[in-house]
Image 1 (cartoon, one colour):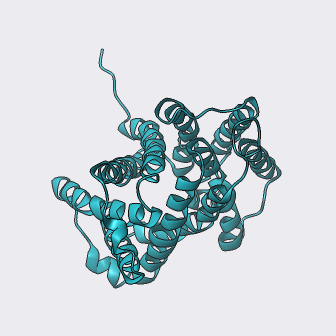
Image 2 (cartoon, one colour):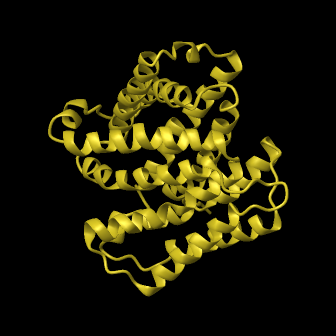
Length: 302
């Protein structure tokens, strides 16, 4: 008896683990390096790895297409995701606990829904609004001060602010992906975004920030490979057999993986209130993923 394995399904199940692991690695690197250095080097280290993978898979590197006909949506992705969004989220990760960072990422569907209302004039359905409200409630419980766990802080605010830009970037990304390959987009955004951040650091007289210990370099390189090479590749591959809203529902597993990794690798703890919030976030996100898709949903991550 032979078993047919859905590789897209396997990819969608594995991607959240590596995304959560990249958050833990970022948190660990944050104690040894500045957030902008992590962002810059992480992006640049990924370029040769992604380029090699593209060659192995015999996929075209459509730089000319991205820089000419698709220039406008590409620049939007570059600025909102690879520069502003990247800086905000990496800085936020280093200033808050890994547990809260993972759980706050589950707010992204709310931002995507907001952009869908703006761009696609989507009519808000009661069921979706209720689920999104429950998602907010669960997230508030996660960051509520309780016991030894710190309450809301600057890191939490930066993570949430990053979602504003990251969720917007999905729409120009859809424009780019309609004509170009995901590998080409990933390589070019990492290259340009990393160079912009590195030059910005050098121009502000922060060259000494790049004088890192071998441990810091190892953590940044690990973050780069885990996030840009593995997690992103798995995420994009999942689209070969699964619909976007199905993949989004699997991404809620980041919460489960993130909590386990934070407890085992960083020895972080969660209060009963935060566990309750995490359960609510997980349940609400899974329910959102099971909503009957509308035409607008097909262009969003909900």
